[in-house]
Image (spheres, rainbow, N blue to C red):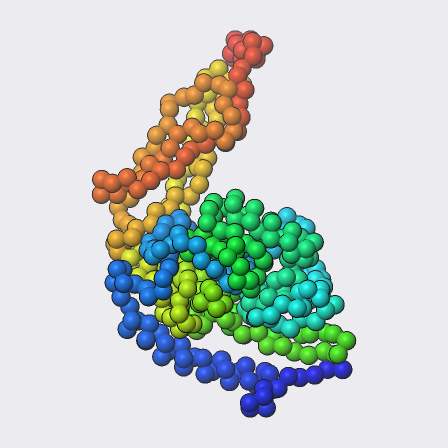
Length: 403
């Protein structure tokens, strides 16, 4: 038995109704973008919400903050940590996108935002991720938590351990979806930015899902087969150029929260709003911070630092050791001026005594502009070289004599 859902208002099929909604939202985008730009303010009164923070994702630089360390209820922004653990499991190989996840009676019983999964219904992991990211499904979140952790309680323990590992000092989770109004379930604007950065930095594929405006899933249950429409809860996607995510949240205690991710000109910003009085307010505040950030930020990335010559090794089993850069250099300017005329200075010894260990620091590459140091990156030994033995030295002498 197959059913096609129809809109109760217009009696169109789901596909037709979604098409109409997309067309209407395009007009909303134009009007709301104009309103956001008109409402842009100075950094002193940038947002009206009680708490917020703006972070540049590549460097983790905080560009703006307001009461960013006060503990507050995050509502469904909790699901950012749930998603981190889901993608951790995929990375480790213990979970695959095509794996089937069965909905329990406990997962089905979740209220609030849901995708109406039935007890015993199975969906693959990718569909569950869409339900969590796009529609903020509490039922899908709990089903995934049980699948990975064995129980929601065990999964929540893992969430708190992961948060601790990220240095989220003012965060404690009680559930995996944020539905609870328990005073023991809290985080801060700063900690939300930290876990948002972890999610999009370690698992950028999440932005493919969080930028979807509308999608459908198919329920297959004992009652038959039916389509169900998913509409993204993040209205900033349609109201701000470059927005690609990430997660909304709202309860009576948390009020309206948002962790927004936007990308422009090679820069990715994370804009966190907590406890806004209404949905429109959180979107306006998030956009105001993004506007401020994009107007102030320029990112310098050294994509071609140059080749490193091997470093001579004294008394080693080999005469020279290869060198590698520890990382790619990035510098964020927040004064509104692009970084230019960058100078680089290499600091390395002329030679090094054996033994040397792969990964140990050999020297540094120092970056500066206009007489100001921008930063530095380490230069590491590319391999280990042991100290030469007596026999090895005799062999080298003998080879020299023969030549």
